[in-house]
Length: 183
Image (tube, rainbow, N blue to C red; front, side):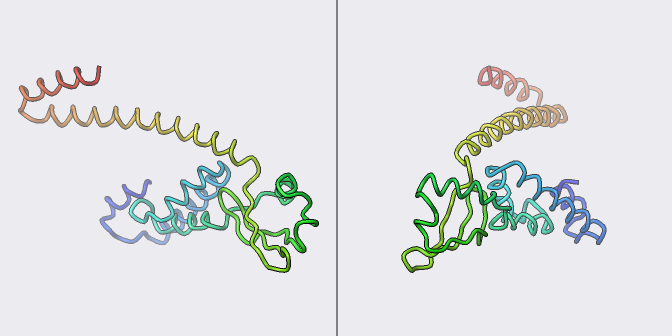
């Protein structure tokens, strides 16, 4: 059940233990789905992770992990990116840890020693530009589909509401104006 419906039907009551377990399971599934869909969808999850007005706390708990606990890209891919940008890791850094200290939607961060100083090396995910462009194209298509359906739903709701009123003259005038502006 969508959370906004839950909130309306339960009038501010906390979920039961069974409902809470179900919400936790759904939150984990949403986390995994967003991670598998890629960086742009992870960003969407990051935005949602700070919206308790939209999602239940159980979802937010899982989505907060998208801030810095995203599974990292394999080091072999990261290593080839570093080599293409900087050259051999062994020649540039005195020490370079292969486990990232943080991993997020667009990149990950590694500890290294450079000229005697401890540094953080942020590396973009492999093929990030192409992946983000593809993700944005998909999101754009989804928004167009959603926009189409939400417009149709709003139009139907509008018509039902006006049919229930006695303002037939005003309804005819608004309908004629809609035809002029929407054509």
